[in-house]
Amino acid sequence: MAFNLFPRSDAGSPPSPACSSPSSDIDTPATGRSVLFDGSLNASLDNLHNQYILVTGGLGFIGSHTSLELLKSGYNVIIIDDLSNSFQTVFDRVRLLAQRYHQTQGTECPTLQLHDIDYRNIPALCTLLDNHKITSSWDSTERSSIIGVIHFAAFKAVEESIRQPLKYYSNNVSGLIDFTATLGTYGIKNFIFSSSATVYGTIANRGVPLKEEHCVHRPETFPGTNEMVEQGCTGITNPYGRTKWMCEAILADLAFSDPEWTIVALRYFNPIGCDESGLLGEDPKGVPTNLLPVVVKVMTGQYEQLSMFGTDWDTPDGTAVRDFIHVSDLARGHIAALATATKGELRENFRTFNLGTGDGNSVSDVVEAMETVSQRPIPTKAVGRREGDVGSCVAMAGRGQAELKWKTEKTLRDACKDIVNFLRVREEEEEQSLQRQGQGQRVPLAVAEVSS
Ligand code: UD1
Image (cartoon, rainbow, N blue to C red; front, side, top):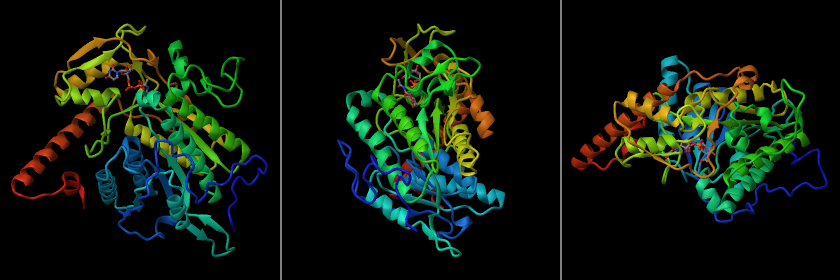
């Protein structure tokens, strides 16, 4: 049986991008590479129920933690990552941590693959998807062994998006359209999308915790009131934020057009921290702009001080307040969303969820917590507000708790402790590498440390 693209629609459907080159390559050409690393203990496609989760951007900060949680939960994982903002060594670390976990549990470690391709490289994607077609032995129908997709791959630097908007619209929005259209042709229709609290725009400035109903894609009644909320967005301040909102709107339309799709958009608040092993962490290529990576640069002496953007916000200490969520909690939120979606238990076939703690902490709180945990001073300097910032952005976390049966477990202090541990591990590795080089051994640092 062949899978049909957009089976219920005829007129007005876009041409299938399947297995042809993507048309949208403005300033962000797709790579031609397609190198497969298979990090499985048992590379057979037949083990562990022969079911896979495809993760784009699976070696990034959130992607790597989610891939690890997927493996711990027993899912086979296929990562697509073009390494544009990540490192291949992260793959070895995810695999190592998953193997360690399953060894302690006495369970079999699922398979993990890495495809070093741009997710917009449709021919390479089709080759991968073709390799995961399976035919039922009893009625000869064809389906995919990929039962769900978690889509992280996207550009995310706010500043850059203002300077190069087409780069963002091309990768984040056009890329998503071609990607989902291709998945649809293979009948892969469980989709988890990496969205952001940025979709709430300046609603965050109202000073109330943000509910999913503050930004909707179909008219809804706001809970507890008779107020109608119209679809649309309010005061999104930059192209990056608009790409997230546009992607949500496109996915909502797709789900509405075809009930076979099950789509979850997860709106992240401020992910921080790292896996408690210290082997995975936030390690962006280029100049960091998010708070914790900058704090780390100060702690490690690479920056003299932290510029605190705005100390005159309408908040208890004047610095901006955010809902900082530990990345491992965030990663588990994806597992909960995936499980709910694949079991067919979502309330609607397009559903948004805040992934936040429901509690706010200020920039000053973060600095204090990090100083306490690390026992290192973090010099700060008050400077003016950063363009596009909001004073407060905190989630109402009830929907995820009620419908995904998921809640956060870790605190700001846990996140700081894990970051300090990550830095300690990295320092030790660097020292060992220097010693090895001194002995004339030329062994790449991370691979040497973590390969099994
Ligand atoms: C940013 C993005 C948001 C994205 C999120 C997660 C902006 C405007 N928004 O959110 O779209 O989804 O990251 O990646 O960038 N701060 C300092 N000094 C610094 C860095 C940050 O004071 O050197 C402050 C910021 O002004 C802000 C808070 O720390 O008040 C958090 O900043 P950041 O980590 O960049 O996250 P958001 O701005 O909340």
